[in-house]
Length: 219
Image (cartoon, rainbow, N blue to C red):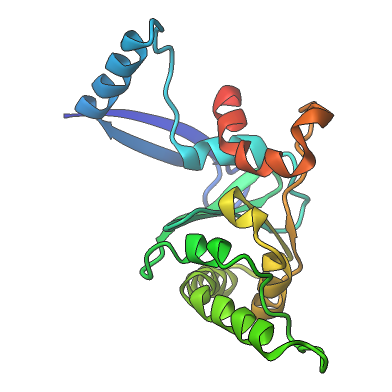
């Protein structure tokens, strides 16, 4: 048995689909919900509401996207959630499992920056090889994102114009530059949210790890 919920993403006002809506439909097993209720109760709390991370991200970032198609990448150890937003509307969302387990963690643990397109001539060969190894480790991630970009662009006249990364991947040195080069899409680390005051003592880099949590409170 499941609990069903939905969010209206967009209502068409013109054309053949006038009066129809695009909706985000979510189904969750009741046993899963019950486990969260039990966890809250064990902490002396009452569970008021639940949201899933995909919708939480959308709620948090939809106002940040411009009128052009913007891709948001929440990159974690073994999963990447890819969301495309345009005019405050979610156009597409995919959850991509990274087949090479923990490729993000491997890259972070390597304690080196990601390879850049052209190595400097005076780069130490050991450092250069380390960068190459990190880049190869990230190939499953890049391939997964690239497939989603190709899918979206093949079905929409206005292609994805910009991208932002958040989550564990946002902490990786030069990942945004690597994605920019591999995808051909300007990519930056997500650093701010409209209407959210982030205390300076928490550091600019920390926001990218809490976007989904903030979005859940907005949903």
